[in-house]
Image (cartoon, rainbow, N blue to C red; front, side, top):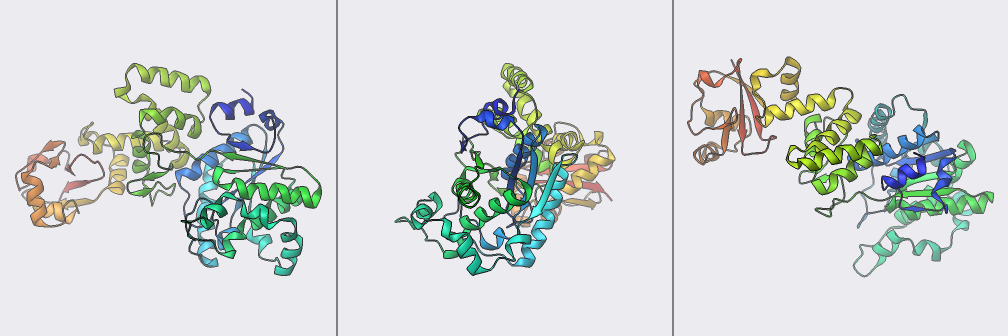
Length: 414
């Protein structure tokens, strides 16, 4: 399948400055910029990274831009109020962390990674006003969506710093065009105004046509919430922020109404493979075949070979689908990374264990949870207060509060 047809089928094209999507089928050089306001990317960023890899696999040359300079300014796109400015030192640390994640995700791919601080930091203000600012009218800039939203009746306002962001990003495109022969910028739909500024600047300064392509923001059909958010917050690519099993669980919990879209956006399965998965899934949705396929594929992509299988097995232990006595040493190690663990003797008070592992905030709450049947020991409800020797299987027991796997603790015999 041609790149243009594949991207269209996957729903990855929202706006473009080129008329026909077939323009994408002749590989050239593109760039995609990544914010450095955090020390980890999220699964919202993952959609963009996977998009980049699709173009690279189709023969495009890629320039991945770390926003060391633009992150010092703060991108107003998609924000209802002013960002808090980060220090240069914090941005540098964030870039190093994000660089590692991108390097892992792009292992074996051919790409160039740069930091826009390298060229933006040397700009002089008067030169910037003359060489960049003179190419933009205030009328044009005031019509940008992020400006009109912030300047509207109920908007929070916008500082000159954030207002200028669009011009700084435009300079990026011009610099990359001149130095890397970049002719296409890719970004989320909330970046469309900034991308148009870059296209306009190259045209005005160089009398050359370059283009922009925006991806639609991924929105859950069920909740209407921007993708990548959960009740607990963002889903991170950094395993220290979101463990591999938590990551896997996020995808497993995908609603049936979203799972096909997510397979298209986040996996490298072909059209035929996805159609077969969905056909098999529809015959018995309760088995959640589509969600399992999605979770394995994306967890493997982000956390490396075997990550999906290990996270799947860990999840089955945590949810008591598989008995803990079958767990391998590697799986026990993974479990200890995911949940609290404690060594105790048989006869120890479950009330004390619940408090020490954080499953209860106090002894009073622990007693209430036990008496109400909210505590599970090895998958079975328990109301007694003492841990018996028979509760240990191969020296281990699994304690859980309620139905959520994350509210579990691994108990080992001392």
